[in-house]
Amino acid sequence: MKHRQRLAARALGRGLAGCIVVAGLPAIAVAEEGGEAPLTSMRQQIEAQNRQIDALKADLARQEAALAELRSALGMRGRGPAPAEAAAPAAAPGPAARPAVVAQQGQPAQGGEQTVGQAPAGDNRPQRDVVTIFETPGVLTPPGKWIVEPSLQYAYSSSNRVALVGYTVIPAILIGLIDVREVKRNTFTAALTVRRGITNRFELEAKVPWVYRSDTSVSREYLVPQATESVFDADGKGIGDIELTGRYQLNDGGGENPYYIASLRFKTRTGKDPFEVETNYTLPGGRGTGLQTELPTGSGFYTLTPGLTVLIPSDPAVFFGGLSYQYSFKRDNVKANTVGGPSDGGRIGDVEPGGVIGFNFGMGLALNERSSFSLGYDHQSVGKVKIDGRTAPGSVRVQLGTLLMGYSYRLNSGNYMNLSLGVGVTRDTPDLQLTLRMPMSL
Image (cartoon, rainbow, N blue to C red):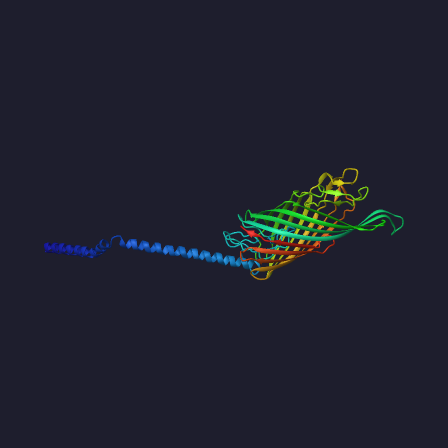
């Protein structure tokens, strides 16, 4: 009996082993039949899917960049929060520089800092939307980019002067000479301005002017045997005072939050100054009624002008304003180039011009995608001149006020043409200033 059981167990074991072998045969056969082909096919499918994912990511990045640029354009006109130039600027407007004006506005985009007038990193920023009506723009140049701005300005002014040389016996009766003089002045200034963006918040600027001036003086002396009018013409031309300016954006701004841009301008003495040109005295004793035979093209003093510009986007306009102070460095032992003048050889002494306090404000409005209009006011208060530490005789504080209007148009090339008109509102201000600028991005 036991023997039979052992035989049955052995038979059962052989049957189970056969079943296991038979059950394992199909799997082994499949593996041997397919080889490496299925694995290669799967790898190819995965690689194709990865390429599709990369293409979708690139397309998504392009769409995000286009959306950011659209938001930037809307943000420049104050139509809601968007990522982002002043300055300016041209136009900031800019800035003046007289201080600068707005050109483009914006706020930081996600994942990076943006400055006034700057599009997301890696993209070219839009051109200015508001015309620059002040001398220094309020728009910062993108880092690594160049802005070349040729400009041409024409200014006209006329003034009357009455010089009394004599003495009075009783009020309203003068014994001596009365010199009545009318001066008409025309000034053309062609300049080349170059700006370069250093960082997202900092830019440098250099301006090289060439000046042509023409003055016509009509004078008439009374209380002389023959009261006749005499006309004296003089002109001057040459390079003017070269200027160097740096601007730095102090905050991020964005939406309807203001932008603050600090600037520092240094003006040189490269132009011919008023003390170098020849002055011809026509009256005995050189009593200050002399005329310049050649006109200066520079101021004759080094100056340093710190300033602050504020840009405020507000749908659908952009408001701007600025403050500045011009400090002129004193010159020692100044002598004038005189002919027939005082016996001291034209020595004037130590000359220190008064400081100039300036401010401006205005508004820029984008009319459409190609054009914009700006309106503003610029004011400068010029202090008294000191000679040898004392106020010069006849020196008074002078107020210069100018009403400015500007128009900007975008050409088919993508560059802008800015035209501004200035009208003097105080007696000492030039009657007319007409300026044409054409900033070009490189």
